[in-house]
Length: 305
Image 1 (tube, rainbow, N blue to C red):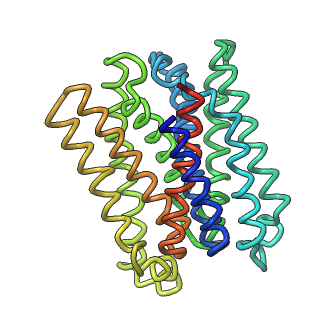
Image 2 (image 1 turned 90 degrees about the vertical axis):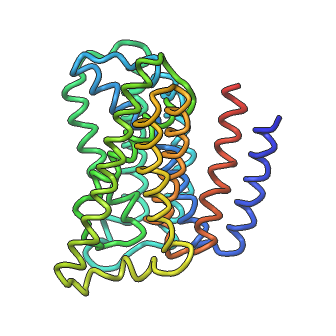
């Protein structure tokens, strides 16, 4: 009942925020979509990796796969928001046209859902080629889902950022929800720290390149995110997503510490998603990301229970 109540409150907030500022609300929903889609898509990637290297993480990751088909519904507002507020002119006009954006998103989610279904049924035999296909899809969708709000932004690390967010999200959820065995959660906790280090590096090094190289044409991204609360989000994400997991997992080897590390990392993923795609939306973007996550997360937990 508590989960359902949170879902209803979140849904009411989503409706109010959409009326108050449709563009900022659409970007906030996109941030929530990135957070909510990260664990199941990351689980697909990690299970493919496990098949290739001979690891066994099924008990910790397979429970996330039933969510895959539902991501298509969550992507609908993302597609609508892209069409209404981020349809560019010039050389990207056709690539980011509403139809092209929707088709790419649908195909990506369909492929991931198909792979997830095969993984759940144990019928997948060719993990290597499918892992390569996953990498290709992530490389394309990163520019749509992450940089679609800032067309023509020169950001070469976007595919790695999305891939690490997804893998780290699945590892974090497994630790936070206590999925799988203790041994599996221990492995995934270490992988979570590696993902946190990688994501911190990718985001920091881009800023350093722009600053050190004195590239004024590229500073617009940071200028748009200089006001509160967006300016605080990278620092908060660093505390919750990198420092907290390292301290919790490094100083305490208990399963409880791994659970708190996973929760902190999921919070950080949400914050960094808001900063990337909804930073210019200010408080509305941040509030929408929180409200949408509460609404969808509450419904998912109620259904899971």
